[in-house]
Length: 161
Image (cartoon, rainbow, N blue to C red; front, top):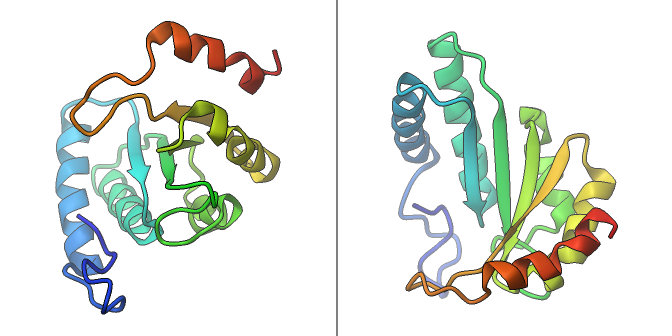
């Protein structure tokens, strides 16, 4: 699902409404909560409007079921510009979702962990929650790009090591 236009010649076009996104996210959140999850993770967000629909849905379901659970949100940096696909900077992404008071906010990236570091640092600078890294270690066909050992070699600078 996406609220971005699938037509580059008509960027205002949408093939799904906010209410449709909320309905679908609500169905998923309701099933997860009824299944006994400990938290809800809104993950790999490339479009902030989708994140807002997912957050709205999750909070509505948690209220409906009287089940306070933490939310975690993970955004996606799509290229070296350091922006989401919808054009937001890391700080703008945080400001768009901060009202949800997530337990943690993470970033993942098509560029890899080393290239993501400045954006994780930016997030850590503005965040009132904890941040985390989700490295883009696999390709679309699920082929592993970095071995677990290679990922371990990249992580120490994120922890100040």
